[in-house]
Amino acid sequence: MPQMAPMFWLLLFIMINLIHLFYMTLIYYLFKLNINLTYNKLNLNLKSFLIKW
Image (cartoon, rainbow, N blue to C red; front, side):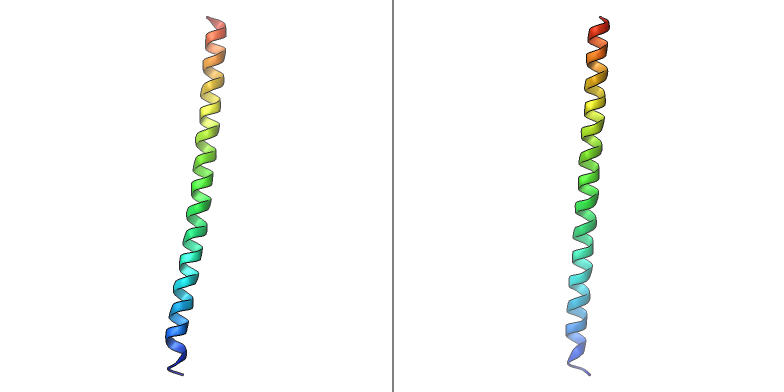
Protein backbone atom coordinates (compact mmCIF):
# COMPACT_ATOMS: atom_id res chain seq x y z
CA MET A 1 0.00 0.00 0.00
CA PRO A 2 2.14 2.92 -1.19
CA GLN A 3 -0.67 5.45 -0.58
CA MET A 4 -0.63 4.67 3.15
CA ALA A 5 3.05 5.53 3.67
CA PRO A 6 2.83 9.37 3.72
CA MET A 7 -0.26 9.27 5.93
CA PHE A 8 1.54 6.99 8.38
CA TRP A 9 4.55 9.32 8.60
CA LEU A 10 2.26 12.33 9.00
CA LEU A 11 0.39 10.65 11.85
CA LEU A 12 3.65 9.61 13.46
CA PHE A 13 4.96 13.18 13.18
CA ILE A 14 1.77 14.60 14.71
CA MET A 15 1.87 12.07 17.56
CA ILE A 16 5.52 12.92 18.33
CA ASN A 17 4.69 16.63 18.32
CA LEU A 18 1.72 16.14 20.66
CA ILE A 19 3.76 14.02 23.08
CA HIS A 20 6.59 16.57 22.98
CA LEU A 21 4.17 19.45 23.61
CA PHE A 22 2.56 17.54 26.49
CA TYR A 23 5.93 16.82 28.10
CA MET A 24 7.13 20.40 27.66
CA THR A 25 3.95 21.74 29.25
CA LEU A 26 4.24 19.26 32.10
CA ILE A 27 7.89 20.16 32.73
CA TYR A 28 7.09 23.87 32.49
CA TYR A 29 4.29 23.62 35.04
CA LEU A 30 6.38 21.52 37.42
CA PHE A 31 9.26 23.99 37.07
CA LYS A 32 6.94 26.94 37.70
CA LEU A 33 5.41 25.21 40.72
CA ASN A 34 8.88 24.43 42.03
CA ILE A 35 9.94 28.08 41.66
CA ASN A 36 6.78 29.25 43.44
CA LEU A 37 7.35 26.82 46.32
CA THR A 38 10.99 27.87 46.63
CA TYR A 39 9.97 31.53 46.53
CA ASN A 40 7.35 30.99 49.23
CA LYS A 41 9.89 29.15 51.36
CA LEU A 42 12.38 32.00 50.98
CA ASN A 43 9.66 34.51 51.76
CA LEU A 44 8.74 32.65 54.95
CA ASN A 45 12.40 32.44 55.94
CA LEU A 46 12.84 36.16 55.36
CA LYS A 47 9.73 36.95 57.40
CA SER A 48 10.86 34.80 60.32
CA PHE A 49 14.33 36.31 60.02
CA LEU A 50 12.86 39.82 60.19
CA ILE A 51 10.67 38.86 63.16
CA LYS A 52 13.74 37.54 65.00
CA TRP A 53 15.47 40.85 64.41
